[in-house]
Length: 269
Image (cartoon, rainbow, N blue to C red):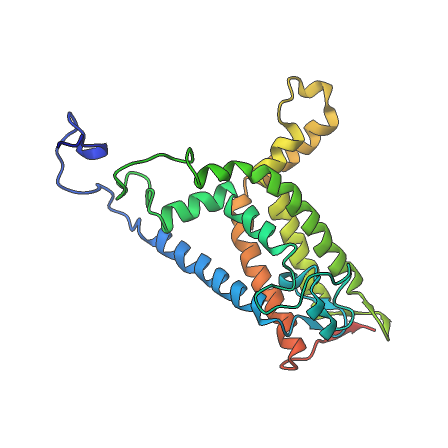
């Protein structure tokens, strides 16, 4: 049984012994991507199932536990803003209502797809570098064909971003002291702004604003939003990485305050 050579080994191609003619350090980006994404996945997984140190100073709720809808949220009075209706089980995250959708939104994101295809799957690892796979089917078969539902997860991500915004806003009110501003407020607020930048710079958001319009002149409002989103879209990769860091730092700050390791410095109130 004979097999037809493909890619650089296909008949008619120049016979070059080197696997790639690239002389730069093309392995660096895939390696750094694996390290960066692994840190976030490991940290986020541990914190999601730790089920403690998620609510601080009676007002700071970490985004990893928002919205807190498990019966276990009762251990921190005031942490549940939308009721508690999920069973308290160590195998169920307190924010089980939102975490799966946020994860799927990121996994199907156009940038993240490129990132983990090149790093974890080496398909390919870099431009002009042959991939080790003998066959390429792209996203035409299960499960990768499910990547095409990204635009639907975008709408759910918008709802979750609204919830995170609500958490950041009501955190300015302390049950006993009224309106206060602490370092934690600035941390939560900065994280929300960055999350909105990542969500709004999404390609799906750009399509919602101006996709399928035949004449921009007939839709001046949508065209205005489309131009702004298009400008933001050029930094989508940047916001994708920044928000991974901001989520970890925000959660870490809340956890340190909740555990008593550090004290939240109040600026007002």
